Length: 453
Ligand SMILES: O=C[C@H](O)[C@H](O)COP(=O)(O)O
Ligand SMILES: C=C(OP(=O)(O)O)C(=O)O
Ligand SMILES: [Mn+2]
Image: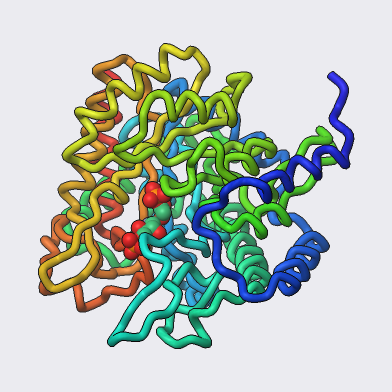
């Protein structure tokens, strides 16, 4: 097939400008936005298109039940945390620990994707925030404005997109260093748990680490060795919200002459921007990365089919993932029709669950929170529905952190409303802490095991 002329590709990448674009910041200075776009276009890509292709194959495997995807990280990364190697390491470590729990428990390869190295932009329910009669733009993530409630901080500043690019680069560098440079060596599974032993989840982890050590000694004695035991692949992802940033980071791949978004391996379109005739869907329809679309409780089969027509008309395996986020009380009644309607289309999709965003509540003391039991119940509902239909539960999408924050209620330590204020550090949505993340991984590994019977 003849490749499309380069100028036509670049034209197609700008077509979104004629379409309705939701949740874009009201940038005060259009010239400054253009300048930032030019700067970003002059900068190197953050990821290589070939890596995105490899991830697409991995996601295809998850869609067929030959692997399972673990996607996790902050709701909103912050510039402050991006300079803390300890915080980034704790997050990577949490994802690696969860992945090893899932791999060992279910004997299934786990595809690891961080909500990291670019998760700096947020859609908000209300574009404005009012405090004591003062109205300012809502915080939309560090790539847009500052969290402090002052006009200086809250007015969107396009220069922040440049900062987001550089901080994504340093975070990604650290991810690559940790996952390729010895930290992720399987013989270190014990060390990842150091200092965390006085809790049932940590004890369970310790026991599993001992079993893995024994298996490794057996393999070594039997002369079995694999580079897979020493390094892991971890991919980057974020919500493709800021159209100017995502367009500037889209480049034509030399190997294939096709456009790839080089700001992350995997991009997703959020529940609030998934209109099939809107700007976000149009922009991502032109790039070749694997992409996801969040589907909330009002999604219809027709919505999802039209998204497939636009985003994956030829039914390329691994290209399109639907990340459902229905809410624990709704998933069992809503998901079956959606999955059946899409399965009968015949074109493959990979199904993931985001058990966080449909389960957000306000605690009696005003904190935005979630209940661990609802999170677990939505994942369970996701497995129940897919197993009932004979389709494949392909992965989980989790908001988490490696620190001991107090943002989500419940879990084995029975975190209560009164405790939320102790370490409530998120700037947008509540995240599972390190312990709750491991607990969830153990429960999901059991669900995966049961689904294999
Ligand atoms: O992370 C997702 C959204 O940005 C977030 O849930 C919106 O939160 P809000 O309702 O506080 O604006
Ligand atoms: C905005 C998010 O979710 P959703 O689009 O599902 O509401 C998110 O993932 O942080
Ligand atoms: Mn969120």
